[in-house]
Image (cartoon, rainbow, N blue to C red; front, side):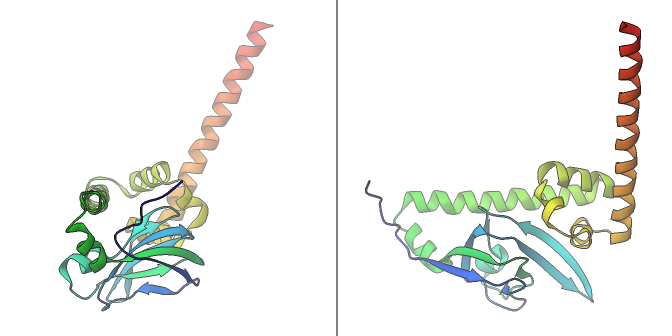
Length: 194
């Protein structure tokens, strides 16, 4: 089968755990596709770390604000694990978009997805309690609870790690209580049938 070559160069790179992919003050120049690994996008102000996003396999990421504005990055993109990425130089992508409808559609899709993710996150932070934000996160991205530390999840949710531990204990206690209720009712129904 013959595949059509892309109208821009793609590059492959291995990234070590804890390596900074894009640092504060850097000028964003690449769009990355995460082949394997996990990545964190964070912002530090006055000694406080705010985690803006987690990126998992088969997702695109970049500092889109820096790419579009060509202003120095205000975020840090860090490999949480060893990673394999494919990346495209943003200037090459824009140049290819001048002559390719497909590339225009790809760029639009990336930007729309980034915008919708950002809007959803802002809405969650403004309208939901910490517990609701945690439950929503785990429902939408269950891999977060499997691979990301409680401390990092708390910073992502905008709460202290102690608060998240309390929320998790409450949820576990409620689930345990519900399972006891369900088992108890099942036993009663079974004894009535006999």
